[in-house]
Amino acid sequence: MAPKPALSVVVPAYNETPNIRPLTKRLFAAVRKAGIETELLIADDESPGSAATRTEVEKLASEGYAVRLIARRRSEGRGLSSAVLLGFHKASNPVVLCMDADLQHEPEAVPAVAGPVLASTADFTVGSRNVGGGGLGFEWSMLRQVISAGATLLAWPLSASSDPMSGFFCLSKATLASAADAGINATGFKIGLELMVRCRCTRVVDVPITFQERTAGESKLTMKQNVLYLMQLFSLYVFKFGAPLVAAVLLALLAQTALLLRTLHGLMPK
Image (cartoon, rainbow, N blue to C red; front, side, top):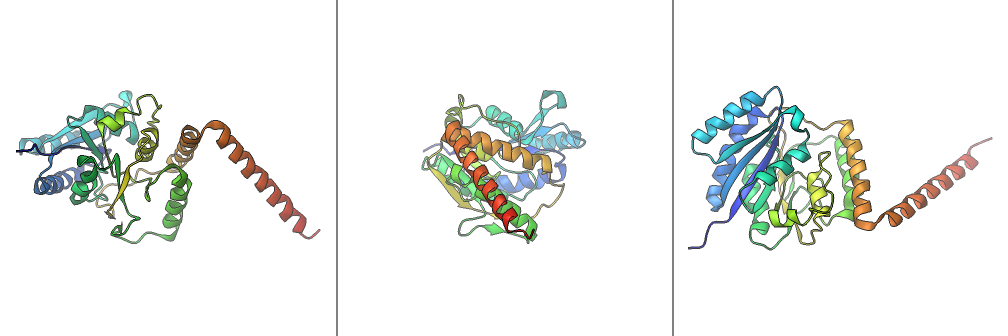
């Protein structure tokens, strides 16, 4: 009998205690149905809710769920991306998947997102809202839609994915190891895009998901994270296309902007 496919699911968490139990139960119901041997790692950064999260994880483990906690003290590091990388490093299985703790990523979608990597038909899979069958399970404000579309457009030359900023993604540890000398940036929120580019993934598959509304907790996205995203994009552009080309494009854009401003100034009434 062929061995079951094996998957490690890493969930970065900060003040997400109310979501841990429903996430765990829904995840294991889905992977057991799909016949995927799975472990769940909760990568928790020290927060006011950390003690309660530890208690919940220990209860779930005692109930037979293959779940464990990776707890970082404040002095040992902070941030979603570095928490994900730490979880991947400590994962026991050869294929690793990242998803959010807030249940906006449906645990029932894990087998589909992991499937192509487990079958070795993809280097990297993305749970995407932007392909047929995917979408939003709630109404986004116009401002949020514009911001998301703009951020996605900025990343378009870097990735073959339709949803490159997605935090729901899967790859093998072998693919991850290929980026050991690529200088992975563990700052910011967009670790999926970072790994997709730094690992030089060519077989990228988008899997449709429905992105749901948060059920508990609150968003960790801030203006600082938006700034870090722009810095991350610049670094990835340099990595993929080289500093001279990126510099030439930026100079051309600056020249065009200056020309436009002069033209507009000339059209203003004197």
